[in-house]
Length: 386
Image (tube, rainbow, N blue to C red; front, side, top):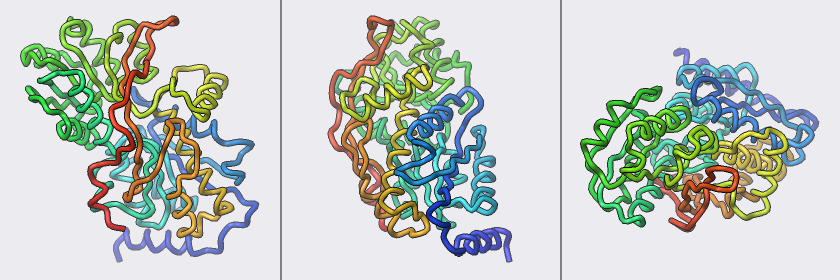
């Protein structure tokens, strides 16, 4: 027998044990990136998720949140998932921020019959033919936010663009999504390293290409470094930039200050959204943490609300997989981004918005100024057969 078969058999045997009593807490395994330049994104997912837990409960059901740092290493993510499955007998997972980690860890989770609900990473290869009934995404499909970016560039009237992203699955999905909707000419397509901080050569390529606009997906600390160097190279006032929201979150905006004014952003959530759930979230975050808000925090919070709705509907019986799955599919919660529903591949159907960095009363802020798409799904849902 192979080691993989033995591990799967052991996990299946553990899951076949009698269900926990109603008083026992439901264990939730959170695997996320907490260290390195992108560590703040995982911290925001974790802290926003915790914000939704009231008196140790989600949906009125006691929960135990077990958090581990994958350090943005796929091997770490896989090892943590396997250990949580076999040693901790966890059947409900979330937290992964980067697609390369998701690709390593999620298959083991769903193959073992456990549930994975993504608060961020959503690679294209899990959205179509390889979709899984126990895999849900509360954020987006990776391509979708960049499809919105491509359409935003169209609406702004730019006819040529240089496009840039890190060379990993989410970066490839990003540029594929942008190209799917952008109607102009791509004059250069640049892939950077996932941990890159020196973009001097990229700035030279942009200058040589002379595009009407730049679209870049450099999340977390990479985004801060990229924008600073874009400004230092004298390009910020010369070539307009459009980004998807991972490249202009609250942390990046605070780090850049007025250098970010004028950057256009395609997004599905902003702190200025005028709905009750979002107002409660923004107020609670400010009171609890008093630090800049990010899309990652909003998604961590929504993920917790989604899980809470399913726990409430099933009295916390995650072991009743059919009932728990059906409850998740209903998405019976009030999202901070407004209207939210699942498509046939269990990825969101949601709206996308135009935003711009403006110089506000208290410094630069991200202001929502229009709508790009209403109630849009993703490009791969038609390939998903469950």
